[in-house]
Structures are given as C-alpha cells and as structure tokens.
Image (tube, rainbow, N blue to C red; front, top):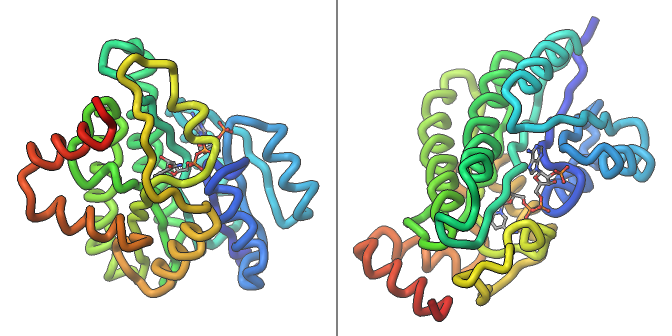
Length: 257
Ligand SMILES: NC(=O)c1ccc[n+]([C@@H]2O[C@H](COP(=O)([O-])OP(=O)(O)OC[C@H]3O[C@@H](n4cnc5c(N)ncnc54)[C@H](OP(=O)(O)O)[C@@H]3O)[C@@H](O)[C@H]2O)c1
C-alpha cells in the first residue's frame, strides 16, 4: 500500500500555525495535515472549515509522555512526512522572578524540548525532499532582558536547526529556522502579564500570512534560515557585528526600560 503524504503543524489552532494550515491545505501533494495543539475546540473547527484533510490531534507539548504517544500513533499511520512545522511556542514579557519555576521550565519544554522530540520522532518517517520548519524568532539573535528565557529558547531553535540541516543533507531533508520579528497574533495575550517592566514597544509588526508564505518559500528553496523584512535583516547583521552588551542597551532603550 502506498504511503500517504502528510504534513504536521504544531500550534495549528491559531496565529501563525493556522496560516500554515491554510497554505498547506492547497498543496495537492499532501493527503493529510495533522494539526496539533492543546485547544481541541480550535483544532476541530479547523477540520470543520477545511474538511477531512485536516486531522486534529490534541496534545500538551510540555508533556514528554504525550509526545511519545504521538510518536507511537504516527508509526501506525503508514505516512511519509513531507513537512513538519514546529510552530508551537510562547513567551512571557517580565523579569525573571515574576513567573514561577513551573512556568519558566514549561517555556523551555514547549519551545525547546518539544521541538527536538517531535523532530526526532518525525525524521525516521521522512524521505528525500521532506522539510522541517522550526519557528525561532528575531529574539534568538542575541540575549534579551525581560524576555530572557524565551529569547534563549529561540537562540537554541535557530542554532539547533541550522546544525541539523547540515546533518540531514545526506538524507535530502532540509531544516529551516524561521526568525520573524513581531507578528500580529494572540502571542501577545499570553506574553503580557502586567509586569512592571513589561515590553510595550513593538516595531514593524507583520501579518502572520506573510511570515508563513516566506517561511514555506525559503524551506522549499532549502534555506537554513528564513528572515522577513529589512528591519529584521538589519537586526540580524547588527547582532553579528555589535557586542551583545550594546545590542542589549539598544533593546532596553527601545523598550524605555
Ligand atoms: N507573534 C510574534 O510576535 C512572534 C514573533 C516571533 C516568533 N514567534 C513564534 O511563532 C510561533 C507561533 O506563535 P504565534 O505568534 O502564532 O502565537 P499564538 O497564536 O499564541 O500561537 C502559539 C501556538 O502554540 C501552541 N502552544 C502553546 N503552548 C502549547 C503546549 N503546551 N502544547 C501544545 N501547543 C502549545 C498554542 O496552541 P493552543 O492554543 O492550542 O495551546 C498556539 O496555537 C511561536 O513559536 C512563537 O514563539 C511569534
């Protein structure tokens, strides 16, 4: 029996993830799109809106056992994974002591451990021409005070993805780290917690469909990094040439902190 071609998108229920669902829905090469997230209602409504090409799968990605169960489930799907998009992730805009230990570690679980775990589960089910897209962030270019864990997790995702891209070349699988600036999504609802030193100035915000289109375009071209817009490109270059202390000072000035 021929294997079915599938895509897997984490955090598919809204924001950037939903834009990937919309774009991949029109990809006739794909038989099914697995939409992962915690909010079952949002995932089910995707299936209602787009039809049974969408396979909702409710999962809390901070739970390692649930990820392993998803891996077992995938093995029984007779699937060739054409595209994996590790999109789920979140931030908290605050100082280090305004979120507790569990929340701090949950952020690293979702933003880092789940990206590694889902990737390791999916790679054996991929083939030549498959793509992994990992959503990092402009925040991953340098250390970012008052978003310190988030920025560090995204630096991990960026570096990990670029290195993995080299390792997977012999299998013909590409890995792309997507590093967007601010995007208009519900991301901010979860990030803003009325902290005294919260971030309040968001320059050059972009619509999520633009970022998703550019990410897919770059992944299909085999790029190891996807950066949209002049401002983020300039920040990327500056992060390579300026000392980190200066970049952090500029950041605090921009945020009036
Ligand atoms: N918005 C920005 O300014 C911005 C900038 C740069 C990078 N990014 C990155 O872009 C990605 C998408 O974020 P977004 O902007 O689209 O924000 P969003 O609308 O808040 O989407 C985040 C997604 O992550 C999922 N998620 C969070 N925790 C999860 C968990 N424990 N288990 C399973 N799923 C979980 C959420 O699903 P549920 O609702 O089902 O929990 C949600 O669909 C993230 O990795 C984010 O870090 C965002």
